View 1 (cartoon, rainbow over the protein chains, first blue to last red):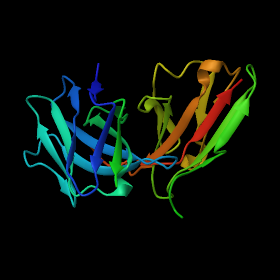
View 2 (view 1 turned 90 degrees about the horizontal axis):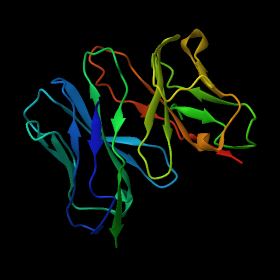
View 3 (view 1 turned 180 degrees about the horizontal axis):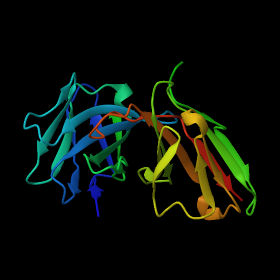
View 4 (view 1 turned 180 degrees about the vertical axis):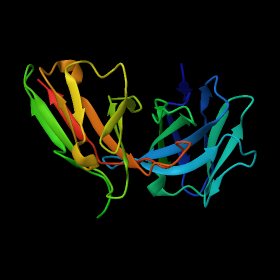
Length: 116
Length: 116
């Protein structure tokens, strides 16, 4: 069975500082995609960043970057220069590639608070 | 706004009643997904459509649940004989269908169901 573990239920960071959210996952498959989704309070979930498992290079999107360690099955998210608008639930998720299944498997989430 | 829309946004019902939710995906997206999110948890996959065909169903989707996507456009999710355990946020997502499954799933705002 595929599982995602986010070991930090809640985190806080000072505005303009850097924070790293942890994620580990378990799958026996070798081809998959990893995602970080953001769910602001009372708003819909949006994609933050995506990583293809076969790519060695870590993905980056502006202030957001990942540290993908395939052997360790680890996929952490780093947010640089944190902004008040980054306050949200962050979900780590993955999807198996090419298996005919398109379901995202999510972790329980990390609630991030950015403090002014 | 051309994002994923869901109706209603909130539904309160009494145990034993039937409820139906609607999802309108992004118009050019051929894949549509339903997820359920309970408090403190990440979304859990329920079912997936490619065009009008329902191709995957989770074991979470008991026989009281039925989903349709006539003509491959909007989708409905019906819950019959609701139970208090059905109380949750029901999320709809859509994506473009290409090989691999790694395309971004765009989420709607969700329908919050409360069963009294």
